[in-house]
Every structure is written in C-alpha cells, then in structure tokens.
Image (cartoon, rainbow, N blue to C red; front, top):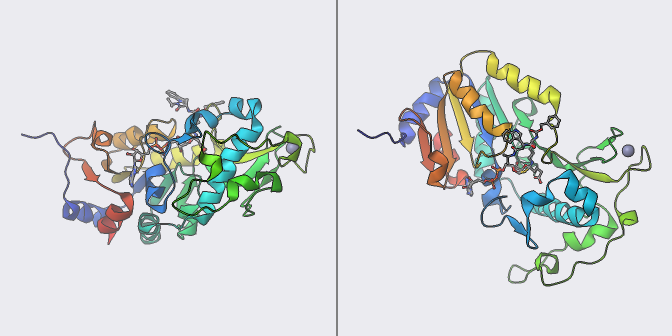
Length: 284
Ligand code: BJW
Ligand code: ZN
C-alpha cells in the first residue's frame, strides 16, 4: 500500500464543507503568481545578496542604505502587484467560515487588499508598508503608501520595460551612493532611522499576536491545516503545522515542489501546483 498523501480535490472539498475550525499558514509562494519573488531558490537573489541575509538587524546596522534599497524595491513591487486568485480564494473562505484563521508570513499587503477580513488574518512577519523606529522608541507609521518611501530611494521605485533590467537589479552596475542622512528618520525621537515594519531574523514576533494564535490553536480540535506556498523553514511560523496536527488537523499542502509534501501521512492532502490556480478549485 502507498503512504502517499491524498490528492483528490473532491474529497478535500467535502472535508472543507463539513470542516469547522480551519487554520492556514501562507508563504511567499502565494504571491508568486502576482509577480513577487520568493526568498529561497530562484528569485531569492538581489544584486548577488541572498534575500534572507538582508533581512536581519545586523545587515541594517552595517549598511542601512543597501537594506533600504532592497526594501524600497520590494515595496514598489508589492504596491504595483495585484492580489491573485489564491488571495481571493482564501479571503472568500475566511468570509464563509466563522472559525477560520489565516497566518501569513507575507509582508506584501496582498491578502488585506484581496478583502481578507482583518479579524481572520494575522501578519506574522509584519508589513512592508509599515515603517518603525530602528531605535525602538515605539514609533510606527502604518500603511504608508508613498512610493518611493523617500526621495533618496527613488532608484528603487523606477519602472522598467519588461525586456530591460532595472539598473539597481544588475550587480555589475554600481549602486548609487545614498547618504544615511537622506534615509527616513523617526519623527518622534528624531535620532533613530526608520526601518521597514517587518520581522527580521533574530527578532521576536509581536507577542500579543503570538498569544492570540496560540490561544486559537488551544481552543479546541482543528479540522484542517492548510499550508500554502511556504518552505516552512522559518520559526515560529513553521511550528504551527505540528501544533495543529496534535489538535487532530488533516494537513493540506499547496505547493509546486513535491519536497514540500515530505512528512505528510496518507490521511493528509498534497495539491501540487501554483497556489493561484489550485486554491480556487479547492473552495469553489
Ligand atoms: C509556490 C509557488 C506558487 C513557489 N504557488 N507555492 C527554532 C529552530 C531553529 C531556529 C529557530 C527556531 N526558532 C527561531 C529560530 C531562528 C529563526 C529561524 O527560524 N531560523 C530558521 C531559518 C532555522 N527565527 C527567527 O529569528 C524568528 N524570530 C524568533 O524566533 O524570535 C525569537 C526571539 C524571542 C525573544 C527575543 C528575540 C528573539 C523571526 C523570523 C523572521 C523571518 N523573517 C523573514 C523576512 C521578513 C521580512 C521580509 O519579507 O523581508 O520572513 S525571512 C523570510 O522567510 C520571510 C518569510 O516570511 C519567511 C518564510 O519564507 P517562505 O514564505 O516560506 O518563502 P520561501 O522562499 O522559503 O519558500 C517559498 C515556497 O513557495 C517554496 O516552498 C516554493 O516551492 C513555493 N512556491 N512558487 C505555491 N506559484
Ligand atoms: Zn524613534
């Protein structure tokens, strides 16, 4: 007999329609069809830097201009991008199901823009549209839509024809020097630099949010745990799948990479493919 997970859309749809408590964990793959690169694998390089090596407080400390250029470019991409059918499918499921909670690791704002009810969405790694004080004075500027975020970062917010590379993305083109003094500064303490309101490696996730998520998980048995477009390598996010399994959840993975289905049991589901194509089929 086979130990492979189930792949039947009809069986899964039945489970969803009878399911009460549903938890979802989303990652960069959900926004891939909207044209936003993932972190690991193809597209995870930015000017020869690993995207994940720029997502640390040490990188910002060492070269705030470089890290801001990276985020200013990602902000520009996120603001230009449109939510895809995967974001909309999850938002619709959230509206239909009273006990649905979606945990997204994405900072791109596409789930909120798809109309996902806020009460059923947690931005685990923050938002790229928020700016907060790097000094830790507590200042936060939420949902700042200006693009570029400040004049000095304009080179990251240029639009280029699809057949040309933005000079900023070409590692052979030297980066324009940007004075730290011209980066956005905190209007509250007046000394700190502003930084993107995202969670970098080594930084704690919002403790109130974590408590809410843990409480939601502990409230009772969980019927389904959806794992969409994430390599599930970053903690604490990746740990929620095991926690849901211990509460009885059937896991359903949506991902083009078969390796992401490793560890699924024959009672779980694996839907191989693009989240933007697969998710609408699962909840229609
Ligand atoms: C598709 C697709 C398509 C492609 N459709 N799918 C326990 C064990 C070991 C280490 C730790 C631990 N606990 C904590 C740590 C340390 C660390 C950690 O986890 N390290 C690991 C790497 C081992 N964690 C932390 O530091 C966290 N903080 C913390 O734990 O604090 C504790 C603390 C307490 C008190 C004081 C101080 C500290 C914070 C982690 C923050 C992660 N931040 C980033 C950057 C966010 C900002 C930004 O966007 O720039 O979050 S890193 C990056 O990884 C980003 C992502 O949200 C996250 C996850 O990546 P994701 O989404 O899975 O993307 P990829 O690229 O990895 O995968 C894409 C997937 O999509 C692939 O599977 C593709 O196949 C698939 N795909 N196309 C569907 N069309
Ligand atoms: Zn400040």
